Length: 138
Image 1 (spheres, rainbow, N blue to C red):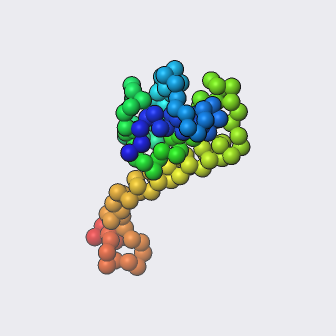
Image 2 (cartoon, one colour):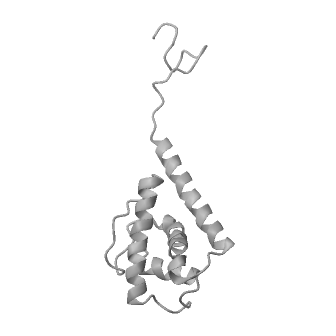
Image 3 (cartoon, helix red, strand yellow):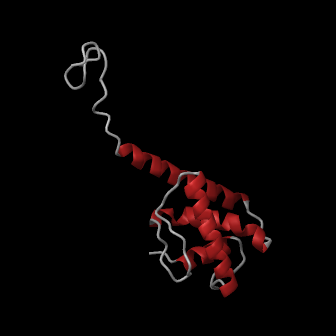
């Protein structure tokens, strides 16, 4: 399982704010938690992306999201934090952030569609074996 600190550290590494072996400072960690909570609230409220995330208060906690979403969350956090550190968002980082977030949206749409029961709909003209006959309500 991924920790909140790992997501914050990885996002700072993407921006070249900390080195590969460094860990976020206490101040960077506190800012990272605030920004992570903001990013996840925006995703949930404006993009209808609900990954089960709830507001975090500590960097030592486990991310309350599926592991398959970690990369997209990390990249979104990096993009959202770049201005704080005076870092530029590279074309590659923006592209990865965009494509991984699109992947999450696609996965969530597919999962919602899997639960839809369409068996009550009529099959159509000439197909009376499985569905309703719309001509006589049978």
